[in-house]
Amino acid sequence: MKKVLVLEDETSIRSFVVINLKRAGYEVIEAGTGAEAFEQLKAHPDTRVAILDIMLPDMDGFEVCRRIRASDPNIGIIILSARTQEMDKVTGLMTGADDYVTKPFSPAELTARVDALYRRTGGGDQQDTGEIVQGPFRLNTRNRTLEKNGQRIKLTQVEYNIMKMFMENPGKALSREDILNTVWGRDYFGELKIADVNIRRLRLKIEDDPQNPIYITTVWGYGYKWGL
Ligand code: CA
Image (cartoon, rainbow, N blue to C red):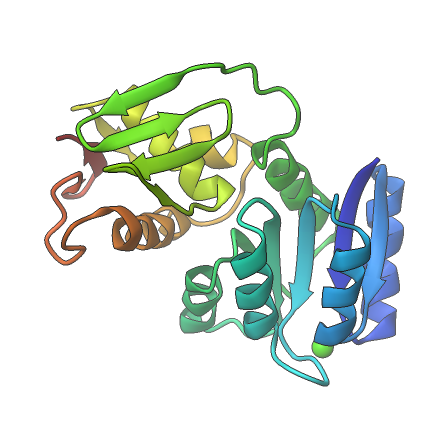
């Protein structure tokens, strides 16, 4: 059963979200506080996607996100935000979220985002068995892990998928649209900026000097290029 956590303290919004996800075939576990969310995830370690509200009674959703991400690099995280300021979106992504949905949202939109995230967090159709080794990097496509100079680099599933796309296309300029279509899926209807935010975070993890990236270079006005 496809399991999703919904963390939202407002019961009317939560039940609306839960009903729609159940209709879409998900098993939904619920929490009204950050503490409850951690307990629920402990009790349901097979949860693959978490939807997190920001304004909560005990802590904010970004903190919940940060802690979930610290203990589970694989889970997909969607921030549910009533705030529309760009900074909040960026903050959410920098704390390890994969996507965000701004309130008010339609149930169809949220379900589409969960479906897309569920698929790209390893929805069961991965048949890769090998390794891609380039320079100091070793990408294991079976375990979905990355090493640099033999040291494991912890990646989110989205970051992993971006790395895989780069390493499969060395020296090729990839447009942000290409990256979104491959990593987020063609049904993603968010903003191009989400690619930039994830790549900025990826650079922090893999570059020797993230301010002067040499592996992931910017192709101005277009996108990014992977090279060694
Ligand atoms: Ca709330």
